[in-house]
Amino acid sequence: MPDQAPANIFISYGRRDASDFVDRLAADLTRAGFKVWRDAENLKAPHSWEDQIVTALKRSDAVVAVLTPHAVRSAANSSSPDDSVCLDELAFARFSPPPTPIVPILLQPCDPPFVIYRLNYIDFLGSQTDEVRYAANLEKLIAALRSLKSGQSASLRRARFEPLDFDLYLASKTRDYVGREWLVAELLQYLSGAPAPALLVVAEPGWGKTAFAAQLYRGNPDGRLLAAHFCRADRSDTTDADRFVDSLVAMVAARSADFALAAEAAADQEWPRKGRARAPCRHTLVIRRG
Image 1 (cartoon, rainbow, N blue to C red):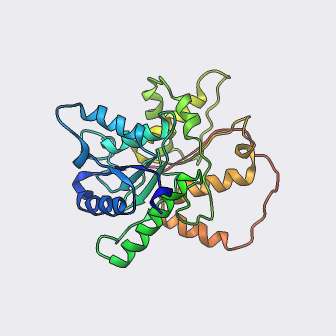
Image 2 (image 1 turned 90 degrees about the vertical axis):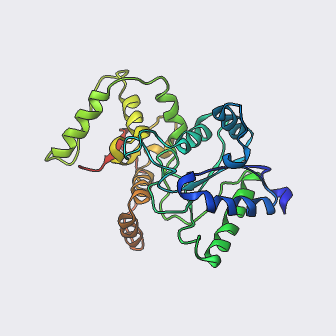
């Protein structure tokens, strides 16, 4: 029923490769009882487009993130001189208090941006040419958006492994973070040629190890960061050995289809669990070589 749905839905997308799809999606969501905001129809001159987007995000009950190569492009990883505006929209939704729920949908093959890659997505691949697939996925999307109204999480697809959420915690750790680009460069250079598979960074308390690791996590230099884990004294799930492994597996699986298939196959087999064993309280980053 329409009255069960969030009233305001913000659609974040890349105009270059998703405009036609979003035209149809916005019309279908409107027919389902949602009030949809998208830039092509709602941005008004002569007002600042940035101010209008911020206002729309603040008024939204949920953000639908349409994932395509143009939407997730980054100046660091493409020929474009600028990051996608969508990345800013999603970061604002995630970290501007209070955070706005985001429902990602994968329209074209691409790596989900790190700000939301922890979230499960609805797989819309092929939906632009397959009416049956589109209708089924639209139904999933509407159900997910309606579930948010009742305070439930948007259950989009079953996942054997679930990543832990560090985003809001790390946002506070990286606030006003500046400098140390040289350290990032040296770290990546070392890992590219190092014979050892791991590097341990050691420093006294208060030297900024967590802030540096958090900046790597959020910045994802050269797109090489695959997963991260942050131990917190106030969260027992972050020091649980099983959750440590599950979370890292889930994060890497979200970045690698081959790894995801291997992880699913391995999960079908019985493997020993350590029960309530605690993991070493260390921050862990998984970075792809080269």
